Length: 205
Image (tube, rainbow, N blue to C red):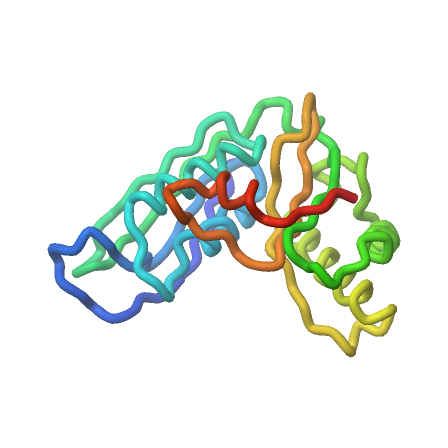
């Protein structure tokens, strides 16, 4: 059954109708894989609080393709008002996706993070290398990662830390994807999200 999810992202100040940039009013996702992942990537790249362009939309499509989860990603744009747009994402999951496992866990940023403590905290929550990709839906997975990060940063006392992460995926080999835990949301700079990802400091667990 195709999942249909839509979130209202809001809109900001109107600017000239002739500008090449715009604000994203809402994003809808059609996908057999957990649509919350595509919605989260959309919030990273085309957030409601800043102007974006078609370059950003193409970057969004590219990042979803580069996740290793989808064979086809297509974005449709609808004009909803002056300088406002609605995006509909059509994401066709890879047919063998249910057989995929987590191949590696990577962190981007979090320089003060002890990766050994993080690995232990993740494992205690069932998140480890080798588990099936479908073990946890995207939102519960994100919650477990946030809890583990805060535990690792605060020596086990989660009440003393209040960090949260952006979770994404990257190809990890045959029937594998890597879980990427980022401190900050990615933006399309210099027209290439992948270039920004490569330049970021990352560590593997």
